[in-house]
Image (cartoon, rainbow, N blue to C red):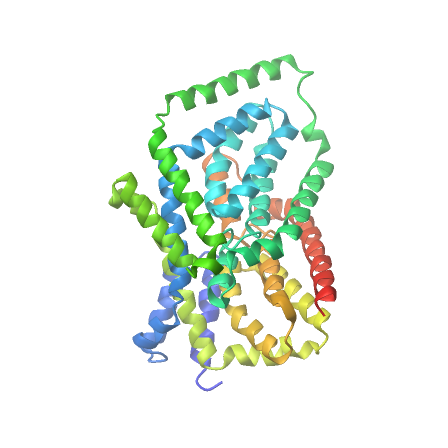
Length: 434
């Protein structure tokens, strides 16, 4: 590990800044990169080579598609329809919103999904006299579970898919089953531990009347929103095209990053939106954050730090494939719960690569263990996943303060249950593969 002290110290400092939110995450990552450049640990040409542009293209493309879909009014229509279907039933609100959150998280991304869902669910539940906090936490947790199912659903999957070369179809085929089981297990757990809060309101005439007024207000807001049907059709058509190209990747040979950016550019062209205005909705800080982290981890890999961690920590567990898979899953799950799962995933990819070279495990099972651990483990705490942080921030904006312990109390057992489900699934998968 020649000259590894400086990059290790810089990486740890950036990790601390991210964990405790001392400064903006993009600033923290890029400041770390600048320190390495100034101290000549790496030069700018090497630094650029460490960036995974495939991941950045995929993120930028999906962010652009979602920004235009939001402008089309699609999410407004969706939110109003769900609100009407619930008819003010607390249990229906949980179930219907959770189904929509899980599906949207899988095919858009979970951060975008909570930005859409959280405001309407707070308005609906608080207007009914219910506690919105339970619903906010449940949707954050469900968004992370749903996002685990696809390549584009959760940032760790985007990173794994792009860096390793796994396809959209491989994620769906290998992860849909544990995600569906985890989704239903989470819903049942939330209902079972909060049964009093989900009692029907049809015995209370005053609450029924207030719910009808609230639903009428939501309907009126929808009627006041101008929907351009042609614009909406173009947006949904391009989203369908993107998913079709993701699914047919093995036929077309187009990578997910190329597909996402291509469809985004087609959408910009055919909708004739104000490009400058749309670009303001892109999360540039997130893209810069990813770029900075790729460089920081790339330097650690070049200096031999990643190999040292792999050989002295992960490769010490022996050569039993069942133990190796469980170690990757649970270490990923626990660490991702208390540190941001994005930098952890970027750090783990070269480690898992080395583990697979030493002890080849079939059918990419170690990658599925890393994905399930990083995505599901993000539910341990409110800082474990970006969707959690965004959900808590939006709740605060609506006057609903959710503390670190309050979130953890509601989510920790769900996380453990989903990781146990993932463990069982991976053990069976490995048993059939060997």
